Image (cartoon, protein in one colour):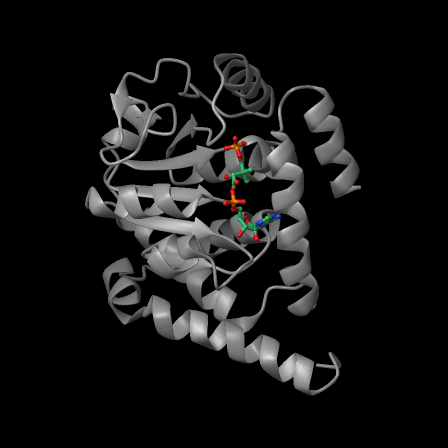
Length: 236
Ligand code: PTJ
């Protein structure tokens, strides 16, 4: 169903052709993890929730794959935090940005940014540098599902906390981001949502969770989890 949704999204001009290839890469890691949220992913999801709770100007970046796979989860998380939603594309065309802004609006996201991308992310070539002044450019915390490595690095270099969702724990995005969630985008957004609700209810200080999180060590745990599953014939 998810593959069909992506292909249909491509037919409708929402998903980039490269997005179909990216999905296959993600699926391969998802199989290795047992198509479930593994413990290190949950730790990262809690750390991402803490960053969003502590943020002053949080933004959720949305691309074609994220919109088609998880539009309602993005809209719900944006309302809960609250955070701005910006359609920000790696393979950017104005037509696709407009379609995705409309698509996210129909899914319940409010005041979606993306069409007027007047600011630039330093260190990147156009059109990959384009972003919104009120959105990603001014954000202190950016949640970037399925991001490219160069852009994740450029956002970190701007001093932002970059929260990546990427099923591949080995990708440059995962290794360079502040918090990397090695989980499927739909599950990850729902779990981050859940952690925010719990931390708010329990009056948890997000700063302690942020300081206790070690991204490298956590990715190492994710790789070890995959290694154990392989070693035990994927029976875990
Ligand atoms: O819509 P656009 O133009 O912004 O383009 C979006 C893609 C995804 C094509 C673009 O950002 C891209 O090329 O990304 P990469 O560099 O291929 O990285 C995508 C990463 O997301 C890969 O490491 C995949 O393993 C991972 N991934 C794929 N599907 C999922 C995923 N991670 C989480 N959940 C998924 N469902």
